[in-house]
Structure formats: C-alpha cells, structure tokens
Image (tube, rainbow, N blue to C red):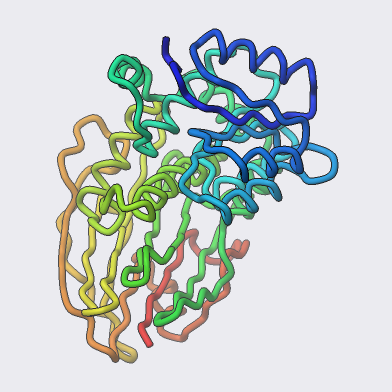
Length: 373
C-alpha cells in the first residue's frame, strides 16, 4: 500500500470529515492518530513520534496556525500539510512561511489528493520508508495537476484574493540579519506584482536572497510566489536536518526549481536571480535564469553590472542550466538585483527603499540590496 506504516497525526475539529479522511488513510496502510483540536494535537505531538502532520487551519481555541508554530518549536523536522477553506488563504501563506510543506483546500472532492500531498511532502523531507512504499512514492511524488489548477483558477478569478495572498508573502522593506541587511523597493501598477523578492538565513554561515519575475503578468503571479516560497521552504527544512546543501548551491537550486515548475503542469515562467553568500568568507555565488533581471555590484554611487549570459526562464521544457558567477564581496561593496530601468537604478543609488508599493507613474519592477556589516 502507498502509505504502509506511515505514522500520521490528523488534527481536525469536524468529526465527520476527520473520520472519513482517517479511514481512507488507514485503508492506504497508514496509522492515524486523530486529534479534535489544536491543544489535543500538541499533546499527541509532544508524546509520540509522527512521520507527518495534517492540520485544519480553522479550529476553535488553538487554531491550526498557532498549533503548527508550537510544533515547529518542538520538532521542526516533521513535515506538515495544512487544509483550509478558500477564505483563509492568508493563513495558508503564513503556514508555508513557517515551514508547512503543502496545502489543500476544502471541499476535497478526491481523497487521493491527500495521499498525493503526503507522498510529496515525505519525498521532499527524505523520510525513511520501506522499499515497496518508496517505490510507490516515486511514482506519485508530484501534487495533482488538478489540485494546482483549481487553486490557480481561484486566484485568477479573484483579484482581491490574489492581492491579499501576495501581500502576506512580502517582507518589510528592511530585513536585518545578524551580519547583513537587505533592503528593497518593488513598484507595481496593478493589484498583483509580477515581481517577488525574498531572503533567508541558511544555518549560521549562509544567507540567500532572490528576485523573481513571473509570466504571465496577471493574478497567477500570486500563485507563482506561493509555489516558489513552498519549494524553497522544502529545501530549507532539508538543510536544517543535514540532508541537503542544495539551497546554498545556486546551480543545483535553480535546476531543482525548474524541475518543480515544469512538473507542476502550470504555465508559469520565471526569470530569477538567486544569490548565496558565505558570510564566513564573503564569497558570493550567483545564479540566473531568464533575461529580465540584472545583478549589480555597488560601490558607493557606482553600479557595475555583473556579466551573466542569458539562459531560459524557469518552467521552460528546453531549460538546460543557469548562468553562474562567483566572486568575493569586499566589505564596502553591496550586491544588488534589479530591473534595468533607469528610474529604478536612480532610486537604488538614492537608497530609496520602500518595500512593495503601488505607484502608477513608474515602471513595474524594482531592486533589492544586500549589505554586509
């Protein structure tokens, strides 16, 4: 069976839905511990070892999001899948931000979608399974195309929902890390930005940041942000558990992201510049896919473009490999990513960092800057 001997903690306050899903998962070979609320879920999680957690986000008392945050403090290595209604997408985004592997929306018409989500989450987390189970996982290691398409359609049809979801993903205009600062400005002319930025510490010695541009430039860009963040979170969890260094290897990371974008079945293409800096040596590794963004070395008021040959965007079936460059960053230098428009470069040189803003009198796009301390 697909889920033979998989230990699942299923936290859901609806007794009928909880019973139906638990019975289905048990028929697939899993062992399921049921919890009816967040407090009971924490209690079970604290006293037993599970392979995966499935949690409803909307529960009375301790809600699913708060419960997952506590579980992350207890054992961040356990993957989680969240289930939500269509009206709580902001909570879904926050769940992905804190490390959830995936999400499903109610109503779930096909329970095999839950099985497929479990399969992918456990493959991504490299959880050990028996040989027959692993073989079946390898056959089913991608989310249902229909599930992804359904959620994309929801955002495409509702501009306000897409705007709300995306805004939850963007950080503040200034992000302070122990030995570095990141600042950015992104300008949008519509409800949804076709551009996205993010950064994270990877262990104590590495910092990664990236800027992406999604095509088509419509509400699907909000879903592209969710996909990108989710894929990166999966590799971050593997790094934290000593299972993968892909996140700090721009060539391998972009290859992984392209594979996932292509296999998602969604026609979202992504231009991206992905930067990793080793903070112990100030060694910067840069990877680029697509041609819409530029990487700059900044020294005072001078911006020097780094020459990176063009390569296909992520999500292209003809994708081969990214463009790469490695260099040592001097202490008075900053590394910048941005669009090539003159007004954007001028605002960067003026240190005009505003975060994500709607501004109709300036071209869509922007810039981000990393400065070591």
